[in-house]
Length: 418
Ligand code: AMP
Ligand code: GLY
Image (tube, rainbow, N blue to C red; front, side, top):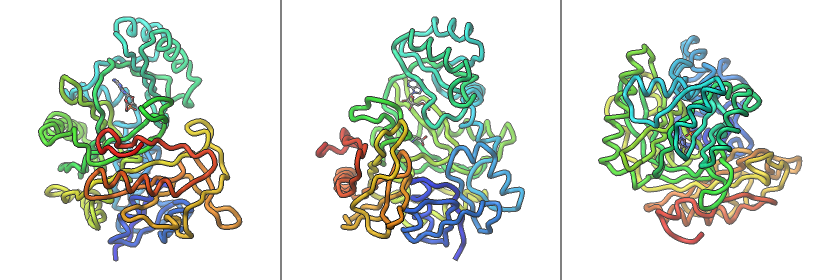
């Protein structure tokens, strides 16, 4: 059997490892307690000291830091772009300039590191105002507000370099757009692309999209508002020019191009690119691809992706259970009930898999909270309705003190109870 190393420690990596393990021997570094309990080997050894037929990098920081370059320099086969391609995620200023030079539809923007220029530009925009830190900020570096005073204060704070460890010393100010958002993950082997099923994630902490931005409170796939016509439009006007522009710049991009697309009344526009799989979108995508995931990612990494990805089957909904205090400082050590020794539901629900993120085991072997997002509960089904009701049934069986959960993931599309 082929051997595969997955790098990362969240529910996204748990989902990737689970899908890859259907047809490969998988090792996760460093992984987490729930992945290990699920029967997947987790090791603390760094990826550079491991041997495998395929290396799959999960987290944004490691992609942006050039781990793929490092591994490739050792002759390893890697799924994930090098530091050059990862700038699409690592620097919003780079990404916006890249989009502009490739003529890709996106919000009008300016890039600033000077407060007076930034505030003068803001005065020329109309609400809502959108201010983004240039660098990685764990999904928390974006302010969208209708209040100009708040926008000005945010510009000052970000440019002072006080927030996000300097990631905000350069900012991007954007035209505010409106419309439903879709996550589109496209596999790219350097030359060819193929789209995976579309999905939608839920970034705000509260039902009805209120409250603070988080790393993601849930997701569902497929996303029916992204019709095949709209998808063809995005592939032609966003993805194809991106691949041409990457080639023009000499960037051999092998991995996933994750496009955050807004379906505006003026057509689809690209909000952002990420250079790795989405979290929690991966937790709804991988179950739709049966056991073909290792082959698919290997072909991408080997530059051998001819033809489309296999058809996805059915639908999936993921509900994230987060710790007390999330997205602020999460409380650790709360005992989680409802899980068996393998980290899955003690009373299994058909079609439900638990993907662990911030969980650990205490001295008695019980699972306890150990991070912001604790577990992702994924339900799959023939339809979104069925997937949703399974996911929420599974979620209702897992409890811990102060559990934070949204009750409206996929509700407006699938219907059902809140
Ligand atoms: P980003 O990290 O760039 O995806 O931004 C995070 C979130 O902010 C997006 O998912 C949108 O909900 C919102 N957002 C980003 N850019 C814009 C924009 N130009 N107009 C309106 N909302 C935006
Ligand atoms: N779900 C948003 C992200 O992965 O960036």
